[in-house]
Length: 303
Image 1 (cartoon, rainbow, N blue to C red):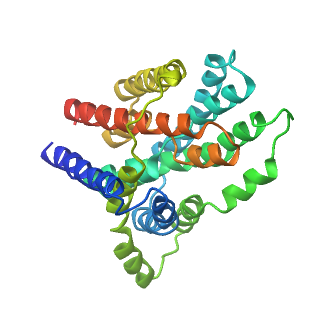
Image 2 (tube, helix red, strand yellow; image 1 turned 60 degrees about the vertical axis):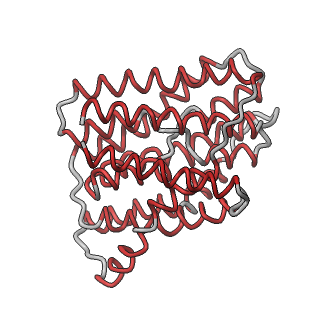
């Protein structure tokens, strides 16, 4: 428990540092794009390589990956029902940000500090399923509702997935482990050094993007969104935690993964499809704060 609370304290300090650096104009919010590219394309893949090297894929890990994918589809369907009376663009925007979770930036720093590589392995398998939602389903939804033309850009989905270095790393490392091959020690040694930067950079980035402004005109839409995301997530997570016959790490992963913040990629898609970027940014910040509090509270109750 001490390690759990210590990790949260360290995380709060680093996130606050990133926020203060932005407020003092030492780091600009626009600098966050460069940091996010470093995290997603370098430090996170290296962390995946170290954590998934020689991984033994069992049924529970496969089930976690499937869960990440199926639950994302389930959330998208619920989003359609909740926001079906909204205008086309509002419905599309809200449906786009309902499924998908921020695992690489938000969850990994906490999981790594609390459970180490064992935790990364479980959350990584959930993130593999989540990646198909983030780079596939949410992009399709955003694209479909962004214009009056009822068409999907399937080609763009495949292009985005093929360019996702974290997703390709997941698939490559798992394949290498399954067929019994080994990565050269020098690659693992270099990846191990680089991966240590993932936690501080991710937390600083969260601080840089943190914003406490709230437009009252968004209140009803945001309340519907938060209710859908967290009431459903907590209900399914708690049911899975107390009912599913798997080990503790599996149950912790399902419980905590379903209450993680909105996917960071939704912000990128919001810009690309010309949705209300301020609303999406507000929702993203609120989910970061709410998820942080929920993870701390649940962790202290159950761990």
